[in-house]
Image (spheres, rainbow, N blue to C red):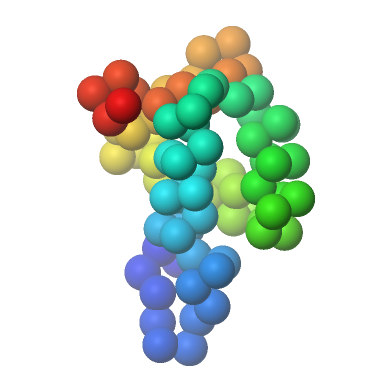
Length: 77
């Protein structure tokens, strides 16, 4: 679920993790698996939440994928 409740852990929220993904992608594009490993090492994010975040960022047109790499849209840089 994207909208947090007062009982949910914000660390495991798609909006919070999505902002972490955006900050990483501002530095450089990532291979799909490498981005997951980076986030998992720092925050211990699970795979379901990772793909939920990527789906959310793709639907709101902030990222795009090309040949297994994830890029941030140019207008955000």
